[in-house]
Structure formats: structure tokens, C-alpha cells
Image: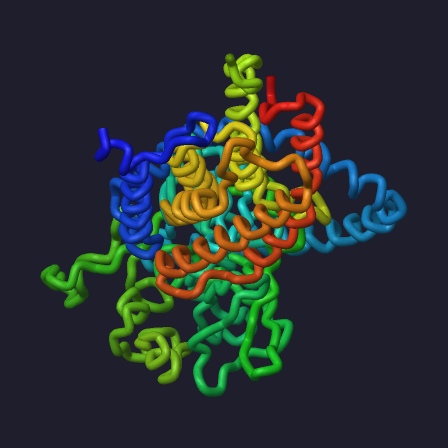
Length: 337
Length: 173
């Protein structure tokens, strides 16, 4: 009896507080923190988290419904005066967009002709999957959002997520009916990007600020304030050319990016099914023409057909001539860092 | 003779406790940024745990506090165990002890909640930084603490008023 009392504390309205249980829970918490690290999360932890979000997503979606209604109230009353001007501006943009639409169709036809001539296949572009944001925690540890669709809708890990204005992030935890999107601003986000004007390469690194920074830009980067930053596709995970934001110079001489996706609250998003480019198998026997036979994997763009190879991303030395003359010595050096 | 707290239905109080914690967890994870100008989110979950551990400590044993923290970790995408550990330690360190439980005056409740809040966020920062293998973002934590300090008097006032009107340590039934 004495030993029993030594581990329990009575006298708080009959509440018993087990020290043994308390210590056990502390140990369990410590173990969870030690083993559930975002950078190296094991499959059981990931599937458990995905299962939990599957269960909670419908409830969170239900809770988000009134918030969506409230969201529309404020801007509606506040922006009544601006709506007419905005409407006129949009009409003007629509006229200009028709020119670009026509140009895009013509370019698509030309690309198809070139691809037929070169006998290459583009990455399959499938229909985008629309999804509502059901949870948007603004915590200190992760910048992620939960969306209300998962693997049942065709969503897989790594797929890019975009909104009306540009890239939002990528899927990193997929459940059956929900998925978590790692935002570009998260500490663990790394996206290879390039300046649209000069093709200067960089890595967009999230640091939990609203303006993620550009790293590995080289000693004399060909970037100017206002340059349009797009995904370079060098990692093979994201497609090339997704709009990301505008380059902004910092006082310290570095570069950051003002994200396009921040122009509106991230509410409705599209997940883009994109099959990542798989690097060729190095042990594949060369074909009769002397070229490696690998490269066409699952209908994806062959590695050799992309502007930069996966090995460049991995930091291996590559011949600049094979990188369409864009990458410089700096690029390969920086990529290897 | 039965204690005053035993006169009320424990089931109703338990339902209130569970409901308030679930609502707090959902609001904590809700897409509040959708609403223009409302990007600040107090730690409603810690408020619920703190108040219930004061008025009905039997509803907030360590295992319940741990489970609530773990649920918050999973809902918000944080590394598992961070909020579970911080809530567990901070509530255990600063919970109300003694026969009367939580006092009926506001200042001591506010002071104790402030201490709980600071300890919880300090532990969360340390544990989160350890899990992320780099320093966690400090600013959201500070904003969360400030927002919680500003918002806590409202639920605390409602709870204390009900306690005073009931003349007992019970709330919710």
C-alpha cells in the first residue's frame, strides 16, 4: 500500500495523478519527437499520419465551410467600389489573353511536329485535380495545408500544387481522401528554379518567411529585380515553367522571391499529376547507335531530352555543352554544394 | 455528505469538456487565413485544457492532455510529440492544486495561465527545433502567445462567472 501511495498523489478532489504514467508519457513524447522527423520520416509514421488526416479531413472541411462564407463577406462590402474598375481591367486582360492563347496553340502544334521528328514523348499532361483547402495551420514548425482530396482522386506524393496565380507547393503526405501540401515557404522546401528572362538557375529555399530566398545563384547571377521566376524542372519532380514569383533584391545583396500564389488566399487549388523524370539506369547497355537505351520511362520525358540531367542536380560534374549552353561553371559548382 | 461538485451530472460536464476540446482543435487547424485580416490564432487548445484542468481536474488526466497534444500535432502537421510534450509538462507544472482547485478571482488565474503558456511554447520551440534539426520559426510562437494572452480573459471570465454563480468548483452541468 505504501508503495502504491508513493507513485500516486491524492487529495485533489479525488483526482489521482500517476507519476509512473506521467513519466511514461514523457518518454513516449520524447520518442515520437526523436523518430518522427520531417526530414527522414519512416513509412509507418507517414502512413499513420495520412490515415489520421483521412479521418479528420471531412470534419475539418465541414468546419471550413462557414469560414469560406465569411471570407466572401468582407471583400464584397469593402470592394464594391473597386469592382467596376477591376471588371474593366479584366476585360482588357482577356483581350490580350486571346492573343497569347492563339500563340500557345501555334507553339503547341510546332512542338508536336518537332517531337514527332525527334521521336520523343513529352511528359503526359493529365487533367488537373481540383481540391479545397480544409486546414491551414499557421504553426511555427511547418507551413503546410491540408486539402480534401487524396489518392482516390489520383493524387500522389510529389505532385505540384498550383492556384490561380502560380505554384503553391507540392504534395508530401497522401491519404486516401486527403493530402498535405508542403508550401514553398516551409523550412524543408527546396525547388530548383530559373529566371525566365536569362535562364539563370537557383534553388528556391523556404525559410518560413513570406519571401523565400534564392540560394546557389552563383557569383554573378544574371537576375534582375522583377524577373519572373519559374520552376526549372531540374529535379525531375516538378515540370519546367510553372510560374512561382518575382525576384526581389535584398539589402544584404541576396535575392528573394515574391510569390505569385500569395496574391490571393490559398483556398481552392489544383494538383497537377506530373510523372517525375527518372534518371537513366547507368548500367544499361548502350544501343546500336551508341546511345544509352534508357531514358523513356513510363512515358515521361527522357532524361537526355531535358535541359539538365538529374545527375546535375545530384551534384555530379556535367558537361556544359549538354545543358543547352545555359548552365555555367557556376551552376555546376553551386549544384554540387 | 456529498461534495458540492457531485450534485451535478458528470456526463453533461464530460460532454462539454470533450466538445470544447474538439472545437478548439478544429479551430486551431482551420483555414483562418481565408478570412481577410484574421491570420492570428490563439492557442485555444491550451486554454481549454487549462480551464478544464482547473474546474474539473478529473477530466484532464495526463493521458488526456497527451492525447489532445498529439491530436494537435497530427492536425497541424507538426512533428508528432511536440505539442503533446509541451502541454503535458506545462499543465502538470502549473495546474491548480488543493481542495478548491481553480480560484474564483481572475488575476491568479491569468498569472498561472501566462506561466503555463510561456512554458508550453518554450518547450514546443525547443522540441520542434530538435525535430526539425534547425531552429523553428520564433515569430509565430510569439504571435500565438500574445494572441492567447489577449484572448484568454474572455473564456476565463465566462468560466469564473459560472463558477461563482454555481457556488461550486463545477462547470458544465
